[in-house]
Image 1 (cartoon, rainbow, N blue to C red):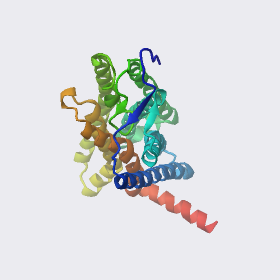
Image 2 (cartoon, rainbow, N blue to C red):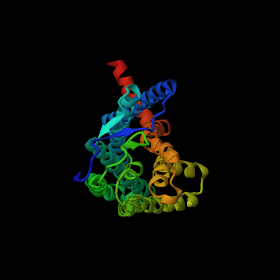
Image 3 (cartoon, one colour):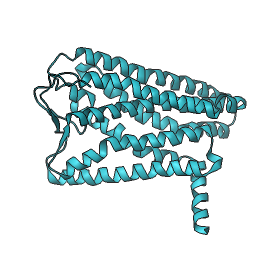
Image 4 (tube, rainbow, N blue to C red):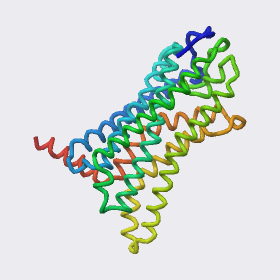
Length: 310
């Protein structure tokens, strides 16, 4: 990444509260969220891997999603905890670029992965007889590989263009981490092209997977409506409810942050929303999938019983 015409060697985070009591409360809250998120997601990875009955496409995607959430929350919270615990609230110029890239990279992968999971639910409910053929192990690997490839390539352009701009004025980021909008505001150049490219990238990253998700669930809704018994409709809906919740949590906040017009941008609102989809959503993933999934709970009880007997 080019860093010509840049006199800034580091950035300072200003998004943290100044009151010691609030900082302490925030440190404890984020520590608990981080431990719950990492422990819960790692537990889902272990349970769905250890129980052979869960070696299905649905739980394969869930393992990948849980791994993704562990990486996602680890990009932001450890640095935030360090900033809350010490007087040093700075991050190097290169470190800020790396953090922004990984936030965009992991967020992009999650968008496409959620679309792959909706396709899995569509095939399972609408085309059950062709499930094993349409979602073979090779197909699942190809879908996840495509998600990771999009995540690697698309944010690379946005991040490299952002940090090739000159930064010669204030180095204070009014945020908790290196997010795209607050960093771009500090550039000493016209950023309209960067904003346009980021908007187009965000449209590709969010709208294409979202259209696939809406299409899949429109077909599933048709099956639910045509199902005669209430018990059958509930059973069909219950297989999709956890995924729908995660789509709502992630897309609702992330899309509102990156797709809103510049005229309606609010820094305070952006900080709150970005905290939700980078910190809270990874914590909700294991809670939603473990509490609402009888197969995961059954597998967990089976593993715990086996350990106790051993």
